Image (cartoon, rainbow, N blue to C red; front, side, top):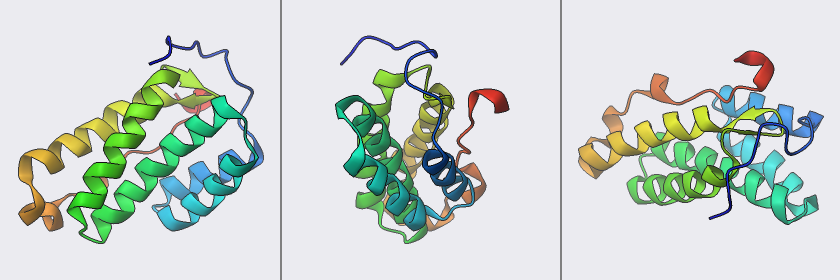
Length: 134
């Protein structure tokens, strides 16, 4: 894992990243995936991993809504792992908050298991915050 990055690393969020964040926060996870995938395809290695981490968490929550336990746990865990290298923040995004709140959701899923995925409280889905929001 890379060393922790400071909040000054990376550029300010692009309009496309802000759109993906809004889509995530509106629980439009499929749209968020599409927006981030386009960014991922254009990005360089550092930002590609960042976009992929958020994308995987978004798709993880899409799987929660669709009650696909294995997909939710696998993708959320992978996204969380990728984003830890970007804490506390990157490109103006509060990565630490997203990782912390997504980890809490993943822990709930792991403890409660596949049989209770339909009981997951969707209000527990984190909001992605930018530095100016915190």
